[in-house]
Amino acid sequence: MGAPVALVDCNNFYASCERVFQPGLRGKPVVVLSNNDGCVIARSNEAKALGVEMGAPWHLCRESFRKSGVVVRSSNYTLYGDMSGRVMRVLANFTPNLEIYSIDEAFLSLAGFEARCEAHAHELRRAVQQWTGIPVSVGIAPTKTLAKVANRLAKKDVAAAGVRCLLDEPSQREALARLELTDLWGIAGRLAARLRAIGITTPLELRDADHRLIRERLGVVLERMVLELRGVACLGLEEVTPDRKSLVASRSFGQAVETRRGLEEAVSVYTARAAEKMRRQNLAANSDAIRPPIPI
Image (tube, rainbow, N blue to C red):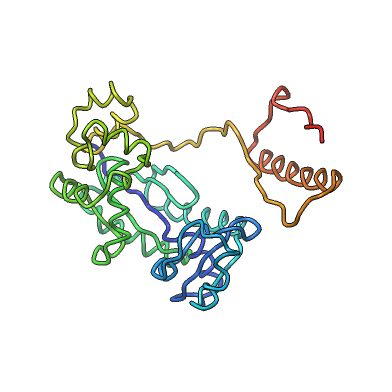
């Protein structure tokens, strides 16, 4: 077995960021809305307990949120990006090998900490909470796929105190037995349906499937998942973030745009924002990627 891998995931990240700067929101149901307050994109645990669904449209939920005491905040991506950077800098103090997977997730190699993985993870959690105010959950396993499983259980199991280790086969099998196929990393409804069509209905059945048959029927990516579920590491840490192949500056209009001039002004602003993001990342666009304007 190779070095243990930890997945650190910030809990309810956008809502937690809002609470850092507004401590009075702690213990209250909090939701964060998308651009121009379109729909719910983040929920605190209290909001989830009230049945607030991800993607719920704000204009339809306004009254119910008011009655149930849900606190609503507009998204602030500049703040969230800054807080993400702070969290990642703290995590870098706990390992020389770090892969920033998303704005609120990172994989860490725990090579050298095999004898005290769980204690190291608890120290990490306390440091992130103390230095940034953001609560995190930590899942530890021999592979990235199993670390995702461990992290999911660390979030849901109060007794785990935010850390779950799956370093032996019995604990891995017990954890997989508690999940649905669609709980696994990268398996959504359509792929789950294809797996069920060949008789695989649970994560344990996928783990125990013939990986060569899986490769033949569903491809090498899923074969790697089968091996990773068995504790065979197929996905290494990507410590150097590859250059982006595309970049998006997506915004919805704050009000109805009914004139060509208004549309041109809005598109110009969004284009300038996209160019700013490109410069920050030292990227460039090919001239042949530029499309002529759409006639109106």
